[in-house]
Image (cartoon, rainbow, N blue to C red; front, side, top):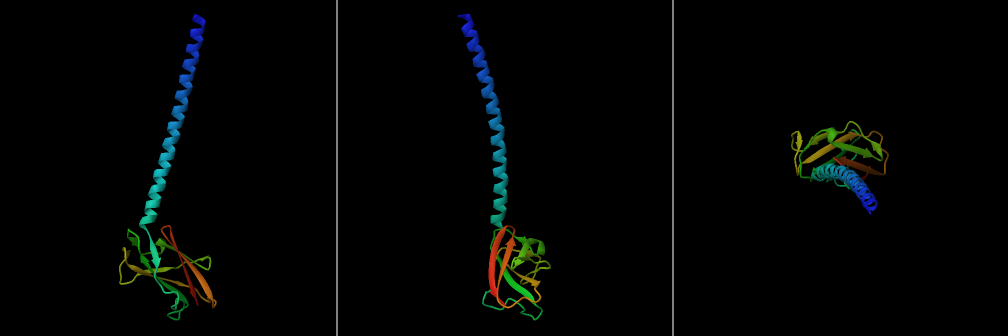
Length: 150
């Protein structure tokens, strides 16, 4: 009888040790998942705060308005946060090609693109063929697409 109790006691202690190990592992994994969710939620919150809307008229002349083969569009900050009015804030793709040398200027002046303000984006597009074109604008994770005809 004493031998049976000792065996049961050893099995009970082994089960407790295994359960504690599993609980410790699960706790650390839950902490990691929780940290990842918190980090992602901060990223998403930043993207929600940054929002833009292209306000140029697709029917109006967007290309070569001033005779220098530039594309000119106007974009309104509709997000909850202010953005710097500099080329690092926006990424522009015209017909799938990344555009460099984008000039960003706040309509009415200033260096900060406040909520509700409009910026003028201009970039050179020499020899843009006649026809339909697609411009994709990315502002702090927010993507907008603008179609126009040259």
